[in-house]
Image (cartoon, rainbow, N blue to C red; front, side, top):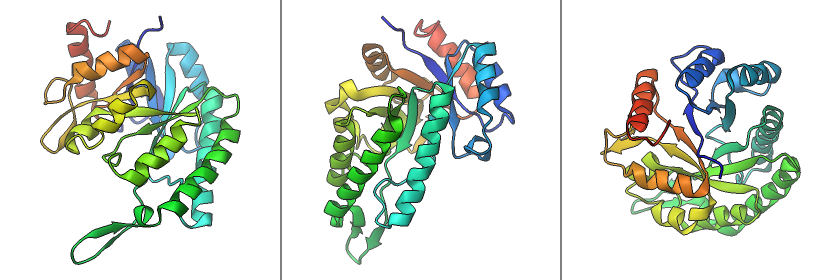
Length: 266
């Protein structure tokens, strides 16, 4: 049986990718999640040949976190097509890097604020939104082709909304998408995503593991109130990859040490 792989995010305090790669190797981790929000991780600035040399030299892998503002359902065709172009280029990079996971957020879209309520446009005009999602999926399926890349949808406190649930279910049925359970996001959203995630437990192939307390997440592991062991059990069941998504080098080192102390990670 394939073991669970553990990784780290690309840390902003480290200026170069190779610094991240060296730290990943020193800690005995398996992969780095490169962040496509950063200027150094745009398709036109990434040196894929160099990254593949680092992979071979240090024995690590990569996943990619897509830009957080991508929107597969945007009502404006030109905006939607621009976002899809970003995704198409990222799929090409992921394929050349041998990445298995492209992490994506669902976009909540715009809301109108009325005196007594907020109206979400994607919910109000659900049929058009879902039609756009379907059109986007048809292109994404072509681009993924035989790459072996899966796009993993991360929960961000939106999965209790019926139109978002319908869209995600539509994407999951394609077989080209899976789920990322971000356990800190789930906690600070008062577990708005928990029911959906557990109902789709077998689709969880990537986990963003960090602790949380109150309204603060991305805390060092075992310093907050998240039931981390429950999520690690799911990772073991599904052979999911686990990203230790703390944001500083110090927190990462301490988190890895705690996992080793508990004999969760060797």
